[in-house]
Length: 363
Image 1 (cartoon, rainbow, N blue to C red):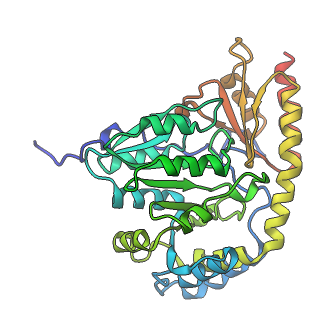
Image 2 (tube, rainbow, N blue to C red):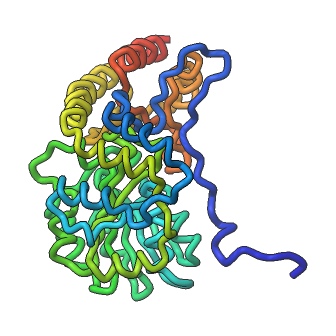
């Protein structure tokens, strides 16, 4: 070797590419590519963020104590079983680093979040894909994929980019079928948007198990994506292990302050939820009328399936939408080459999307 070489698996990673955020030559942009909140952050969170500006010379509280206590109070959880991080990405990598080794296997579903295989490969382990059924996590497929090498299972519930979910009974069935040494990671980034009686984010299962953790984020309904802020709720022994390898100041002080204020502003959270409850079904119905299949979603985004007919493809639709400043997410990397994912936006953005797609499909 004539130069340093990365560990096995690193060069097999296809680097994560975020949703685009610009359209050259277009004056007004409606960014619908990253599932951000159209209502923005709580005014209280913005004020809290700004209040820290005069103290930037000081390190933050490395344990994010105030934020963990605020989360614990909001959800009725023990703060000592919570870890905060720089978004879910940071925490997914932390889990992989702590619990995967060379030769291990970690399972994710066909259209699961791209960070799962990236983190798995980065830890020297092998990602294993479990087929979905109707763009939905298939518990039987996951169970079938388990081998003696399996050490971790990632389940996004709801799933991104499909917007589908599995009932809590199915989650419990999966957990019951896993060997006790396999860590089940329940990624509930979009849990606040789900209004289904048979859904549970994972708190109950974590509280009663030794091999389950739940991930949550402030990037979606809280509108704090720019601050990179997320959290894990897990068994005490897993929290202890992860805290030993976690960066000592992995959450910055403005993010901690904004997070505390945001989780306390329940009125803003309810306003964001109500906006989504109004426009998600409206978009589903109006876009579906155009001959574009829409996967039923319980989150704050929709997966749009375009025909393969020349002139009607996802790529061609994306080009027209972009020219109008409507930025959506191409999902070819998720093995969905003829689909676009769109975030539920403002009323103006939502209506403009339907108007533009109506024009596109009528050509």
